[in-house]
Image (tube, rainbow, N blue to C red; front, side, top):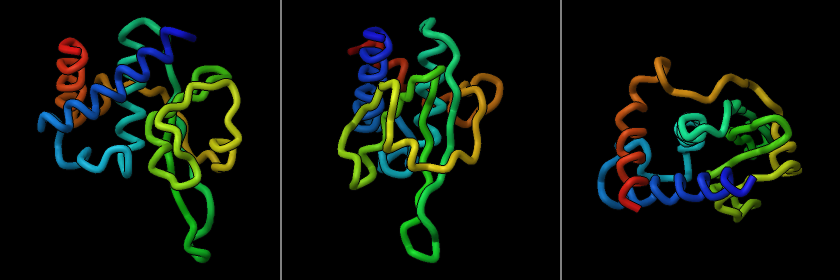
Length: 140
């Protein structure tokens, strides 16, 4: 668990440094806001690549459009673990990073999709982002 937490922190910090250095596209410029899907896929790929196993991308929704409180979000799971580097975009969740076995906050979302979190061979448009983040990690 210690390696997972440290690797997750390192990856999130590398996204921020890559943004500050102008290495990531405009679509990531509001990180963490609006970047949860791409960030989850990128993180899942990284954690798999460094030998920590496969991770599942989880997309969910909560609230209602009629009430004006609808929101979507994406994060990772591995077994009972929940891993999230973008939940701080929500006002009810100030934590930058979550790596935990239980998350009532994530449980508040109705899961709408799950699949293996890996961009390789599936999401070519994220490959340049991934390479830029890896380059930043190597320089940290």
